[in-house]
Length: 147
Image (cartoon, rainbow, N blue to C red; front, side, top):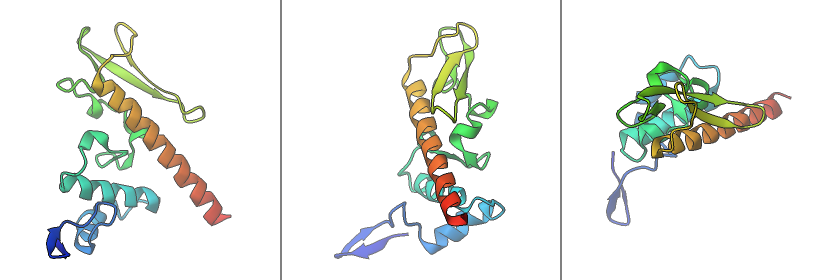
């Protein structure tokens, strides 16, 4: 969908999905009780569909319908080709541990115990930290709204 502004065609910004995009993507998250998470999922689906966001940079997971840091340990998120949750020297899966109390995130190979020093691992750390921060902010807002 293109909008016209100052005689130029522009796409709507990803942080402001068009009503048709909200209908298109929103239905799959209608069952979620956490509406803030649902909103993030919709915005990221729109941005990914518009090719403004890589699926690997999302802070929410459309597969599991959760914050990315909550499901990164799923085997679904192992991508050997890109090195996500993968130790190339050992040809082994890497595990991700997220401590929600301290905010610590670590990625370690299941064979050698080291953290793969790759762009994919650094991306996982960034994404999990951002996801955790968004989830904590979401909980804080929910608590202040409810109380």
